[in-house]
Length: 122
Image 1: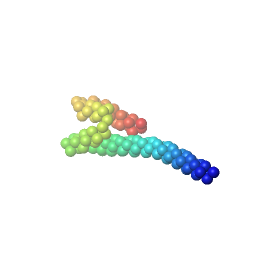
Image 2: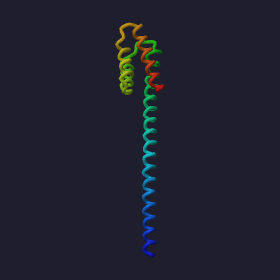
Image 3: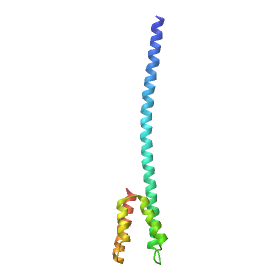
Image 4: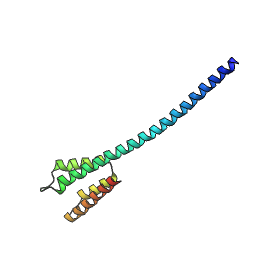
């Protein structure tokens, strides 16, 4: 009789341990998914910040410039574009810097700023 009670107690304890392990495994996966969501959102915020900083620098140093853009400014803009690691933006940037006429440059700027805004909205 005493042995049956010990056996029942051991079975109940083992059952509780199994149930608690299942609970903690489910909680772990739930927390892991939340962490991945937060990391994704954080990387999106960082990318948007880089895009906004580039757009701001571009507007300030190129569009609002009263003189020709110097080498240092072009280099900082080039580095900012490369830091975005976005092929579409890089292509629009290269189209802008390869512009031969003022009209081409204006059209390229419109496309570049348009794609930046569109990417930030996503």
